[in-house]
Image (tube, rainbow, N blue to C red):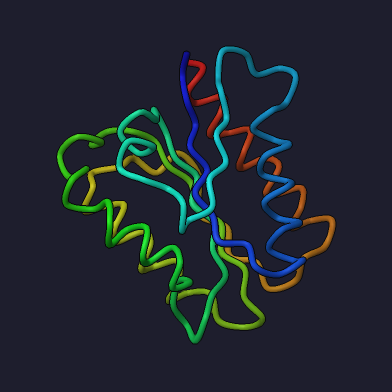
Length: 149
């Protein structure tokens, strides 16, 4: 079974809404053969990363950077997973009240270091509305469909 790992830090209702939209998109009825695993960033482990075939990362933007929880996830998995995950697809969504660019750039640099392949443009969301939820649904669906082959 193909696994899409969704690693997220969603402490607020708006970031939780985006996570729910991503998960709904990844579970779209047209997508078959992909298991979606949603794991909070503080609980995600090296085996979670190594057992996955693709990744979706979600975070709030805090003071222009990714959340401390997602940073902790990368700090505890980066070197062990280095070279083992290259070529796998990933996607990203970031929610912030105003500045999401620094958080998005930081995650993209780590993904580049891992050798991950961007499967969809990263989403930088400052207002959680229907358009943002729809874009997150599409992001989840795109990653899962990419893994379908």
